[in-house]
Amino acid sequence: MRSADDLFAKCKRDGEEIVRKRLPERTYCTHEETPIIEEWLRRKDEERGLASSSKRDAREEETLSIAKEANRIASSALTEARFANRSRWKDRISTIIAIIIAATAAREDIIWLISWLLKQIPKGP
Image (tube, rainbow, N blue to C red; front, side, top):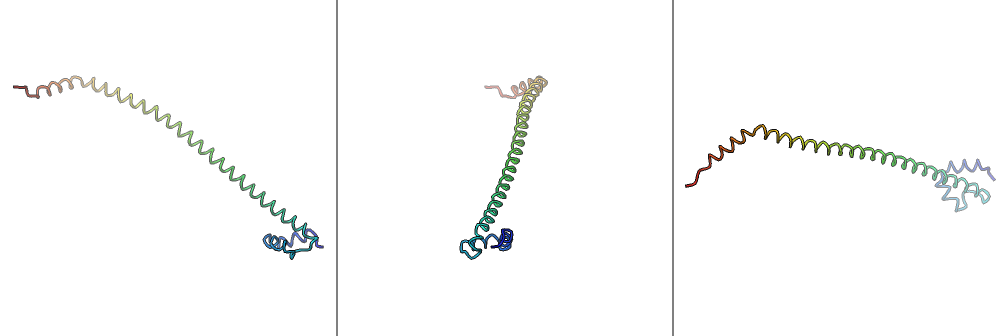
């Protein structure tokens, strides 16, 4: 019987696909060596599981990072929207005040214009 290290080296050389295919056919190793080969396959499965878990953890971390960035952007946008809303009300009030001031300043001109228009209306027979 070959040593575990020799069998592991043989498995590594041949590749996991060949080992998995030939092991059930009983053409890859002796009956006594089968548990060692199965242990090698179990370790390969475990390595793949760990690699998959690490990739999943990395994806979750990236997703969390993206969500935090999106939250920061949304919070900033909300702050800007609130500021713009306050600014819009200030602009409206300023416009109304400017209209009142302009109307007051032009009062005499408005009165003259109204009386001129009234004079232009023909009087009835």
